[in-house]
Length: 183
Image (cartoon, rainbow, N blue to C red; front, side, top):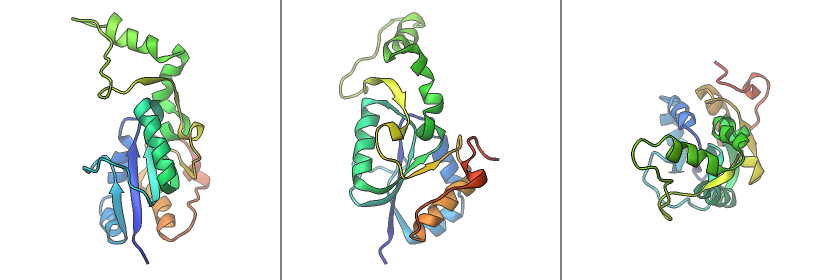
């Protein structure tokens, strides 16, 4: 059997879900024995590859780069897992939505509260443009599995990955569907 091609992606979020992934500790060695991590923010791979078997996507879609990435990820991945509350609901990342658009957030942060030289950053190709609304993954692409938690605890991540490794469609039920850390 071919080795599983696994990826993790970090969109608009805090990286807490990836930190929880690292909390898998020694099980990561077992995972490495049967799967290849082909893309993740903790390694230097620039282009998301084709033919990914399963991907954990952390964070909401908050800017143009996030939007471009999630479309590419969905196209190139068999199983897309919304990894954590920001990916599932928008959560903290979407707290700016009640302000109506990205502009009031930028004005507040970079003009009104500026100490020295007030200026909204604008470097095309370097700083991605914020979308007017932050949205969870399912508002942009089809999601196969929702893994709630802020962040999801390591044992929940492991249960999902064990199902993927066994060739089963990932399925969460009971306490694993509770939002929050579940700890």
